[in-house]
Amino acid sequence: MDPMQAAIPGVRFDLRELVALRARVPALAKLAQRRSADLLSGVHQSPFRGRGMEYAESRPYAPGDDARHIDWRVTARSGRTHTKLFQPERERITAIVYDRSPAMAFGTRGCFKAVQAGRLAALMLWLSMQQGHRLSAAASGSGADLLAPTAGRRGALRALDALVRWQPQRGGQSDAGAGESLARAVDALRRILRPGSQVLLLADARSIDAASTAAMARLRSHHDLAACLIEDAIECAPMPAGDYRIGNGRQLGTLHLDSAQARQRWQTHFSMRRDAAIEGLQRAGVRVARVATDADPVDALGSLLRGGASILRGEGKVA
Image 1 (cartoon, helix red, strand yellow):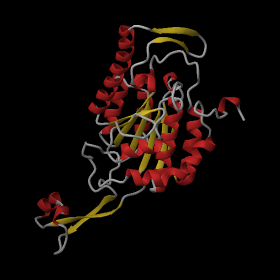
Image 2 (cartoon, helix red, strand yellow):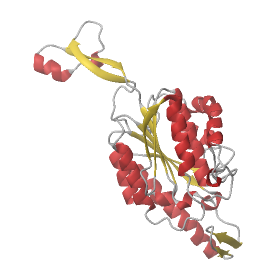
Image 3 (cartoon, rainbow, N blue to C red):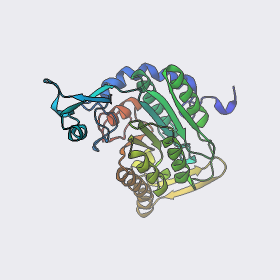
Image 4 (cartoon, rainbow, N blue to C red):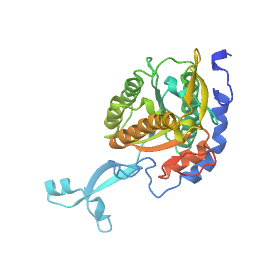
């Protein structure tokens, strides 16, 4: 096995870990139950009527037909009342967008952000496979990291294998251009999806900028979107006073947080980034959840799918 692909608990996942998460799908399905048949539409009404059914044809109205399905255009054109007929929708597509910016190769509680994102992605893929969806995935980066929709277990394993390969490298030097890179991945995915697909974005708040939110807005016009912003504990709560050794995999330094002013600047830095990312995504029509690195991924994803907001503690409580 390539040593770069070897699993390191909490730091780097392998295919075996993602496959094992299939056993938790029944618990996820139970948590995700909600009245709406559209899992990811959130507070925004879906532009697609009759989820699960596709228009087939119109025929003359007969007693007993549902008046809500009257085809008013054909009725006006023909002068005779017509009703629409529907047939079961063809396989729906579920797609994952995976952020592999250097910021994702970080974590102080539970696991790295990239690992939590991989677990959430695997759970979503297994759940969607169980529902009969075709599966697709895309990752940010300079390469053409895009998977065409594929059905069944083959589609799930293909996407999971890609996630293993897409994990960000530790010691990355910069997040410059992370938003543009994410936007390219979203736009590439948009070209292969069909209307009515559902898309789950898994990203760090630093990758969300004007370019990435604009790309999500373009996607939202024909698809249903949700996003998990992955956060570490030190980004969510004030740090205790003290000096902290920090590094990027190549260089080491010291972070001085001994004064209240310094700790406030630290906290403000992360909260402003997070709030801007959430505002931008919501403006683009995306339902957003904040997920901590030490949260149970089943609880986190289940909360998002049933309309919740954030899982910020490992105990799985909604904040």
